[in-house]
Structures are given as C-alpha cells and as structure tokens.
Length: 311
Picture 1 (cartoon, rainbow, N blue to C red):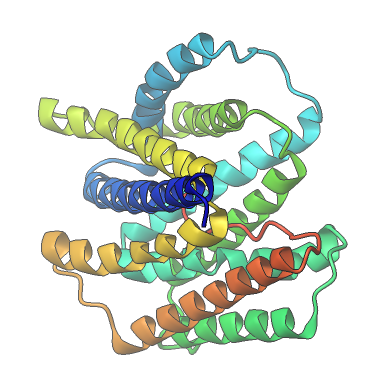
Picture 2 (cartoon, rainbow, N blue to C red; picture 1 turned 180 degrees about the vertical axis):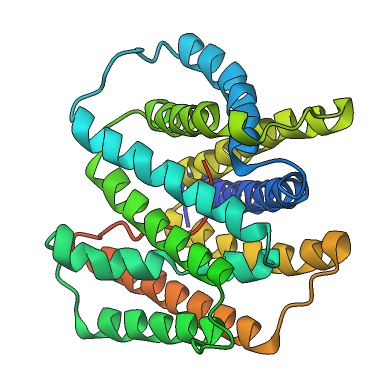
C-alpha cells in the first residue's frame, strides 16, 4: 500500500473510532437525560418538565443558530413541519408519561422498535420496496415487541400502551423527518423544542409545582443534556458512516437497565430483556442489509436509528 493510501486508511479508521466514541457518549447523555426526566416527573407534571427543559434548550440553540446564520423563517412545506412538530410533542409527552409508572428499560424497549416500524411504514407511505430479507427482519422485530409487551388482560397496562403509542408516534416522526431531509438540522430541532414549549405553556399551569433551586437546576439541565446528546450523535454521523456507528445506539438499553436499577431500583423482567434483545437483533439486521445494499451500488434507503425518544 502506498504511503498516501496508508494515510487515507488511517484517517478513515480514526474517523470511525472518534465517531463511535461520540455515539457512545451521546447515547450515555440520553440515558442520563432519561434518568433525570424520570426523577423529575415524579414531582412535576409532564407539561411543566417540557416547559422548563424547552426554555433551557432554546437558550442554547438560538445563539448557535444565529452564529451559524441559520435563517429564522417559515420553512418550505409548513404543513408537513406542523405534523412533524405535533408527532414530536406527542411522542416525548408519552415517553415522560410512561416512565412515571414504568422502568426505564421497559419504556426504552418499545422505543427501540422505532426503526422496525419505520421500515414497515415506508412501504406504504414512501412507496419503498421491501424485499424478503427485510420482511423477515421486520417480522422478527414485531415478534420482539410482542414478547416484551406480552399482551394479556393481566400484563397489558395503560402505561405500557402509552409507551407503545409513543413509540409509534416516534416512528411516524422519523418518517416525516425523512421527507424533510433537505431542511437544516437546527431548524428541525427548533420546531421540536417550540412544540414542547407550547405544550408546556398550555398544560403546565393546571398542575404547577414551585420547584426548589436544586430541582429547577435539574429541569434546566434536562434541556442542556438533551442538546449535548443531540450534538454528539449528529457529529458522530457526520464523521463516520452510519452503518459503523448506528449499532452502538443500542447500548441505550444497557444504560437503561443499569441506571434504572441504580437510581430507582427498577428490576427488568426476563421477558422484557428477551424482547429487547430480539428487537435489537432485528434492527441490526436491517442496518446490515442497508450496508450490503450500499456496497452493491444500489440506492440505500435511510433506515432511521432508535435514539431520541425525546425532543
């Protein structure tokens, strides 16, 4: 191999390692964000949590958008943006509502199935063709959801249905994001934050609790940590191939199990873990199929990755 070729290969490897590191850090920050959110919604309403975290997130995002000269204007396809903002607000509200009553790992298991739903929905709404291997992977993923959900009169609780509904909203959010892929990332994030802010402004006054200084700091940190997690994940996807870094997003379920036990004493049931493993396996198969399609020179569809179960 020529020196220039060796240097290029080293650069690619270094970029991949940095990308993996940033992805792992971003996923950890999201897990910390979820722990903080679960702690706070035990005292404050979902609306109040979303209101204060959105204020903190805006305080960071708006100066960054100004520095990057991102235009503050109504983007093209405003109707689709409105649908996306609504879906984003609903999924994050469902997430925080569900973790009020359920272990983090249980809620996260349902949200990890987002890419499975996206792959299935894409065939109907985006006109994408699904070959037999993808159909098998999607079916495998749905089996994982059923294993984790264990639908029966005794196990199908309202919180579980809320988490499942939130995960479907999340997958629809990813579908609309794919249709708006030409929009600047900051503009998309701004829409999500504003949606959560409006939801909080409308609902928070009905159950307002005056926060202590420590808890107010936690509410503001919720928005800051979330923004930092987004930054790490987005940067990771820019400097390394998605097929390399995306599988590491499934470490989120590990953090959910560990941190849920350490901070809340959550004990995850065996079948939930089995369902999570099946869902993760199906998601990884879909990622591998996309990478193989790209390697063969076919048009690779962007199978979305299952982080950001909140704005």
